[in-house]
Length: 320
Length: 184
Image (cartoon, rainbow over all chains, first blue to last red; front, side):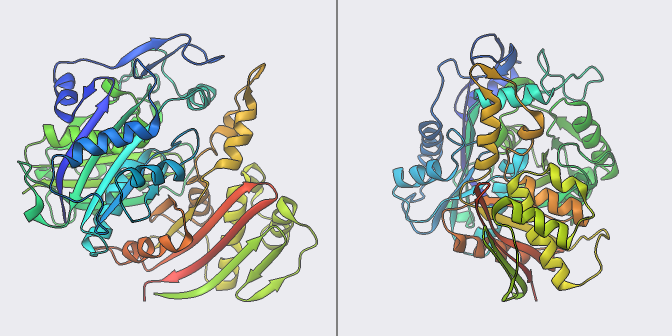
């Protein structure tokens, strides 16, 4: 297992994990209506920064804040940077990742995880494997996406956007809202490096494809169910208090997640669906939503995501 | 780790397990020629973007070379691919549909504006229910520790994976080097 040393979120709801968590607790939402943010694009509802942000500085800010709470040396060969994003800086994923590691003087090549909406959970799984194998000691996992004319127009063309604030797991759900954020989690393979309390450990992670359709989830939640089964190995389902779902509020996604959760024996667990606060923050979602779950749960939770390409991912975190 | 089959595809050459396959076409037309010669039973191929066609054809030829039973639900084989430019070819095609003065976003193109779609297409074709993953890396050799730690992860049910580099900058500039790799 690997241990969370520190984390940070910056979103339209605030700068800092605690500020974002408190916004959620008090029911504040970042969702607003936009009529002229992008040329030609129909009006839409999303959670966007008031001032448009640049991708690289936003990632650097989040990583810097998280790193400042740890003793790790960001410039060490023992530290790896893993970036989770779908569209990066104006469709370029590798250049911004290299700019981020250069900023921190880190000598290793960065790893970019681009596994659609599951990227933020997959990036944590990649960190777990590399740290457990001793390839690196510490991982700085950054998730970030900035909304653009490209993305919003595409989701509109796909008819996936809700005209109003989204309603995950509601019978009245009409689709998703997009969002932007950057979030960072720093992991270590050494418990001794942790000075965060309580200590959260990433104990299991799993990725499965539905092998069904690239843009529609399996009705029976095949991939998501397999992920849940995997991360439940060695633990009774009743000990999972919270399941952080993807909860995009599209009809198919939420129905599929519900089926997978019930099949895995997790119907008792509290469901955490955060899109009504942050929107779908894409590459940031898996990192940001895991952080909110860490601040919400007491002992043990699962964070799951699904995405285009038929891919599903889940992780289990436990309080040590 | 043990590599059992390897394929390399450029716009002008196809080398499978060290043998050059003779093609008459080049570039994207060659990918279609390969499809007609070696698969020809999956009309959805024509809906795929070039990156997905490239990965699909590379996987088809690797699996033909392997000769094992195909299209049965498989839980122990992953698909782990990487490149440097993500889905840039299809992103560029989609951008044209939202150009100013000619705004008509195409959902059929938008769905391919993610590089991991190619791993999903291979999984769907072959009923692979295990892990699919896509990484964007500066150098192909960076994928090696990722593959090793994926196959050897704790509690992993994986025995093998289709892995490699799958890059497409435009319809006539692409490169794939894929392998079937086994844990033991």
